[in-house]
Every structure is written in structure tokens, then in C-alpha cells.
Image 1 (cartoon, rainbow, N blue to C red):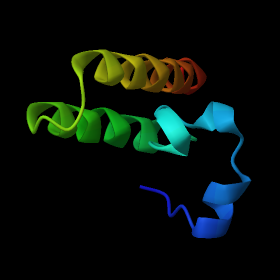
Image 2 (image 1 turned 180 degrees about the horizontal axis):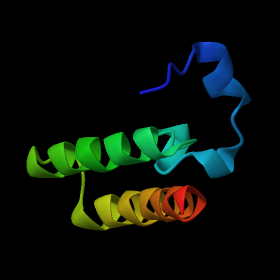
Image 3 (image 1 turned 180 degrees about the vertical axis):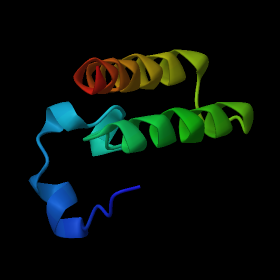
Image 4 (image 1 turned 60 degrees about the vertical axis):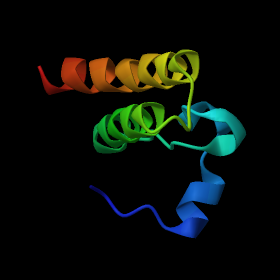
Length: 72
């Protein structure tokens, strides 16, 4: 996964985050896949509701779909 420094993270627009309060950055496909995995873990551990996970997954899927279209 590409390194996301604190400075880079702070400079990302709010639209590049999948979770509330600028959590789960999804500026690229690798971060999007990671966000989905971490949201699944959080939901299974009881730290996140299924609706919150669904929102994160939806945002991450948009990034992943865009990445797949570029690769073609």
C-alpha cells in the first residue's frame, strides 16, 4: 500500500474518506480495499454497526470500480 503520510492525509479532501470524521481514507484502490477489510473487522468486533460498514463499503467500492475501469 502506498505510504500515506500525515501531511498527505491532512491535505486529502473530505470526499477521499469513507468513514465519519475523516476516517478510512480511500484515495486509491489499495486504501479502499484496506478500508473494507478494517470495517469488516470493526463490525465483527462490535465496534461498528452494519449500516456504517455498508456506507464505508459503498464508498470504497466506487474507488475500486474507478480503478478497475482505468486498468482496462
